[in-house]
Length: 343
Image 1 (tube, rainbow, N blue to C red):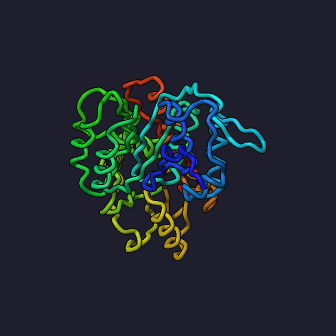
Image 2: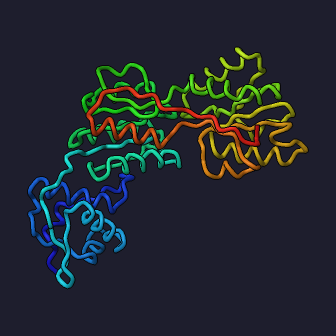
Image 3: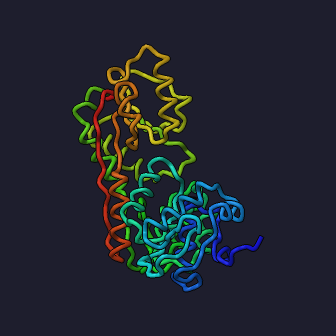
C-alpha cells in the first residue's frame, strides 16, 4: 500500500497533553500554511490515519471535523477528503505549560480554547510540578510558537524557575496563576494574589467564623502551593484574634469542636469529612469546613461545602485576550467566597 506523502508532515507528540485529534488538525494546518500541502490536495482516509498514526478512527474523524469547522477541509462522498482552502486565518501558535491537569486547570484550558475560537493552534504540555521536566520542556520548545503561557508551580527547585523563564522572549510570554519575582522585562500575566485573596475571603466570612475559636489550614509539608497562602491566613488570624494552626497531615489530626478547617487538596477534604463523620460532631455547627476551589460536588456534599475560589473561567478568558491583543498587561483574577452549610 502506498503511503500518502502527507504523513511526513503529521507528527504526533506523545509527551503533549494536547488531544491527539487537535495535534492532527494543527499539523495539517501548519503544513498548509507553509505550503507543503496545497489546495485541492487529497488527504489520507480515516482508516489510513488510524493505521499510520496508531490512533482511533474516532480521533481521526474528530481531527477532520475540526478542520471542516474552520473551512480548511472538504469532502466528497465516495472520493474522500481534500484541502478546500489554503487561506488559513490561524497565525497564532500557543505553547501552554501547566503544572498539572486538575479539574480547575481543565476549566482554564477549556476557557482559553473556547475564547480563542479556532484563531490559534494550541499545544498543551504537563510537567507534574517537576522543575527538571519543566526546564527540559521549555528548552526543547524554544522555537515555532507565537506565545508561551506558563503556570509556574513546583514541588522543589522552583527557586530557580526565573532563570529558565527569563530565556523566553518576553514579547511572547504570559505567566498564568502565579506571578513569581525576578522575571525581567515586560510580559503579560493573569494571576492570583494568594496572600490578599485568602485574607479577604476569610474577612467576608467573619460573621460565621465568629462562632468558632480556632482556624486550621491543611497545608501539606511537601506541596506546590505558594507560601503566600499561609502568610495571608496567619495575618487574618492575628488581625482578628483567632487561634490558628498549620496542619501538615490531616490523617493524624484530632477533629475538635470549635475548629474551622481550611483544605487545599481534594484528597484532604475527603479525609477530613471521613474523620468528622466518625465523631459525634456536626459539620457547620461544631466543626467548620472551608474548601479551596469550587466544584459542582461541593454544592451537594453535606448540604454544601463553603468554598473560596478563583474564577478559573475568567482566568482562561483573560489569557485569551492577552494572546489576541498581544498585550503585556497584568490582570489580577477575581476570588470569591461561597458560603454554604459547612460553616
